[in-house]
Structure formats: C-alpha cells, structure tokens
Image 1 (cartoon, one colour):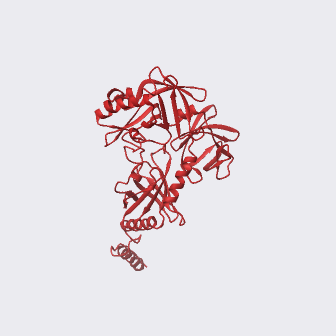
Image 2: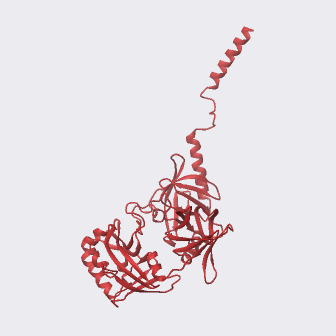
Image 3: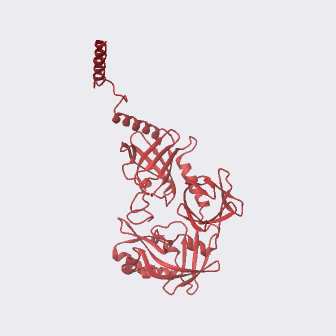
Length: 434
C-alpha cells in the first residue's frame, strides 16, 4: 500500500512540473499585447465601416457646461479622418490624421491639427468661449468604452465627458445631417422657458447648450443644470433629467402657430414652454454682437479713435465684441482681442435698468474682469465703450426685425440721435471689417 501511495505522489509531482512547461499553450491563449492589437484592429474596422461616416455628440468640459455639438467624422483605413460640424457649417470639411493606440484601454486620438475637432480643445477657443488658456476644455483623445456597428461610445481622456457616435443612415450624408441641424437651431434659438410638470411652472434659462431649472423644494432653492444637444427634431439631454419624479431624456420641438414648446418624446407628463420676453429683456439675457457697419456716426467716431490709438498702437485687432455675459458671469461689454497668436478676452461691466418693454439704461460700473481693465487703461477702451454708456449712463429705445426671433436689435440713444448701435444675434468676428 505504501508503495502505491509513493507512486501516486511521484506521479503528481511529475504532472505539476510538466504542466508548468513554458512550451505549453498559455492559459488565456495569447499575450495581452496581442489581444490589445486584435481589439484595436477590430475597433478600426468598425470606425471605417459606415460609408457615410458617423455623427458624434460632442460634449466638452468635465461638467458639460457648454452643452453638446454635432460633429460628423469619417475614418479611412489609411489613417486619415474627415470632420465637419455645425460650428463651421456643412460646406467646411477638414481632413487630418487619427490613430488607435493602447493606454489603459483602446484610445482614439486625432493626431494632427483639425480645426473642426480642435475647436473644442484649443486653449484659445476661436470664438473666445471659455477662460483664456482653457477654452472649452474639450478633448482630442478619447478612450473607447465600447465599439459596435450601430454605436461607438467614447470618453474624453481629459474631461471624462461621454461622447456617443452613431452611423449616418445609408440614404443620407454627413452634409445633409449637419445642414438639418443648422436649420433647426435657427428655429430653436431661445433663452427663456417655463417647465410645466406636476402642476408647477418652473422658470428655465439657457446658457450655451445648457438649461438651468430653478425651483423650490422643501423650502430650499434648487437649481438643476441639463446640458443638451440639438437634434433634427428638438433637444436631447446629456443624461436623463428628473424633476418632480418625472424623467425626460429627449424633447421634440412643436409650434402651434402662436406658441413654441417642447414635449418629451417618451410621452411623460411635462412640457417645456418657450417664453418670449420683452425686447429689453432679450437684450440683457443674450449675447448681442457689434459690427462697425451697425454703428451710427457717433459710435464710429469713437471706434475710429480706438482703432488708431488703441489697437494699432499695441499691434492687435478686435476679434469680437458683444453686449452680454462674460464667461465668468458678469454682464457688460465683452470682447476678444487678438495679436494673431491668441485671443485675449475680458469684460467691462455694466449695470442696467429696464423700463417698459423697449427701454434700457446702461451704466458703466467702472470695473472689469478678465483683461477688461488692462484694455480700458492701455488700449483706449474708455473710448470704445463710450457709445454704450458712461458712468452716468445712457438710455436707449430698442427696435428689432422680429420680436419673437430677432436677428438684430437696434439701440437708439434717447439723448443723442446719431448714437445708434445695431447688435446681431449671430457672432460677428473682426467687427471692424463688417
């Protein structure tokens, strides 16, 4: 019996040692490096498969404060990628390079500069959005969370924002889709709403692509931010919105002929109703852009002086200027100035008083934020803002092309008839040339 036990023990030892033979197949069948190579190859095949490319729901910054934007991308097997977005329009397509690599999982990176994609990650945003040196705080490198033929889910490496890509339908093109978004956002360009849910009317404001719902709950004021992206039919939230126990993920835009509103696509008992405020409230609740051609003779004389003695003297030019909120929240004369290598932003702060529906008094608060004070002191911005209002203030009467969807608002100084300013809803770059 002892001989039998000894034999079995020796047989077990031999089996253990021979089982560790390095020439035998690995337990998992392949090395981790080879498995990752296979994953990247499969992901690339999926990215390159749709003949009409993908629509990317792009969200920048860690808290998605700027909301989402539609970007069309089309990947090629040779490592090139073409991109188009609602920012630059359906007639602008930019081609650059991309690659797939391993770094704590599969990574998609846009290797070379592409103004469509890097618009969101450039620390000096081309339109001056975001703080100088940060921009919109977006990404050009993305972790691939999942890749399937009908959906690719990415996560920004820096921001952590989730980005969903879906293939363009075979009977449409990326140009078609982006053009439809641009057409719809012109119809759905609102700033104020009321959210009707469970018998309550909750005020809602908009900043970029972000709705803020403010209401009372248990004696406290609650503010809920809901980043969204524009779709061909309405708004789609970054994540489901739940207020008063009602959850909504997507809204469909409706127009009754007299009223504009949005209804949940899931049939939930809620309604986002557009509020058309008086013209003076629309002025102070939005960003309205200056153009030199929109100034009366009074304003042009002050802008001319600033051009010669301010901008030319420091070797810069005005990239944009608007009445509205600066990125840090202050209202006033907001601007971007460029020396060709970057955009320097700031605001000269204004207080305001509204009278009736079409009167506004603008009073310079003798303060600024960002680079506002520097330009006031060093680039003759005390002249540039004079037509808007001094420390004693100016009172204006407002008119517009369309009170419901104004493309422009004209301010006429009640005391100085030649001091008129037509401000535009759409961004105006290089306003001295427009």
